[in-house]
Length: 154
Image (cartoon, rainbow, N blue to C red; front, side, top):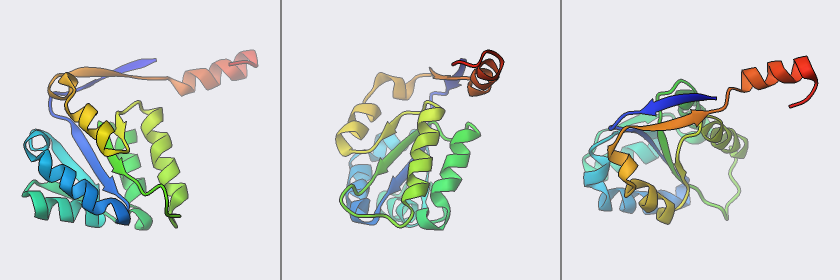
């Protein structure tokens, strides 16, 4: 297991499905001051709308279905995203559902905080760890695989 430090300023990804964009925008407006202490990025339209409605700089990637979820996932894997807020629409089938699942898998694999509802986002954003350096623990899956191949068990 390796330990990685998250700085005082977090790199936060903001993502929302179409039916949840208004909810995420309203949440971001209500939390503008707290979010303004951190570096923000997001997928396509969501990033643009949050920037327009809050005045905060938000680096935009492609729309989720056009590869934006994968771009955010790559940033997580490269240690460039520390935290993700993803308001997802649980009642509507998404054409890029496999990309969403891959993004969530990467977030868990690299042990970053993830909020998928407003209440969870509120809890995480109000945590004292948001303004402090903190540690996240990543499991060394390469070592596990090597050990499994060597001993035949996990």
